[in-house]
Length: 110
Length: 115
Image 1 (cartoon, rainbow over the protein chains, first blue to last red):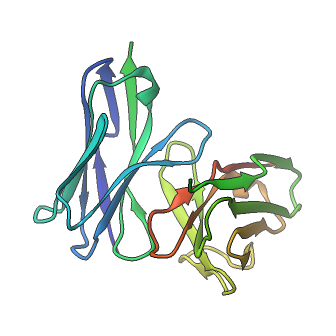
Image 2 (spheres, each protein chain N blue to C red):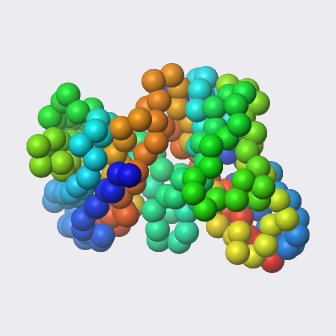
């Protein structure tokens, strides 16, 4: 099955700086890569996703890049704000199921 | 759009009780619904997948007689934890997707505590 590795497990950044989270996947058939943000006591919220026919996607301060050859994808958050503090999960899918990374706890210091 | 509502948000009950959790897609038809379990500071673990009108497909190691799933309509799926015991205490989260399979939209989870 699919194996998704996510790094780092924790990330502390100064407000206004950028945050980058990286994920690798094992199944070359995976073609859909969403990123979710989970706040304490809540369910995951989809923040951005990318499909395998696209190399990069941007939505305001959030961007995702995908390198199919290397089988890795990354989340970039620019101009971080305190409300960006949360746990972020990457995931990969080749069908209807999602395989999740272990998560990254992001703390934005004011 | 794409709102998934999960109820209740928190349940505390005695050992041996059966607990039902509801998951509703409010503004789209959920062809497929998923149930996850999440332990503290860990990732989401898929328990089962259900399609409307069909029997759920359970992941390896998940007891189907313990975790009963019903997906009776395109907007509602339920998870019943039967004869719950303290080891069943966890955060249960549902998600739903429409036609095409992705993306999955998640509910806000149910914190289940068995005393």
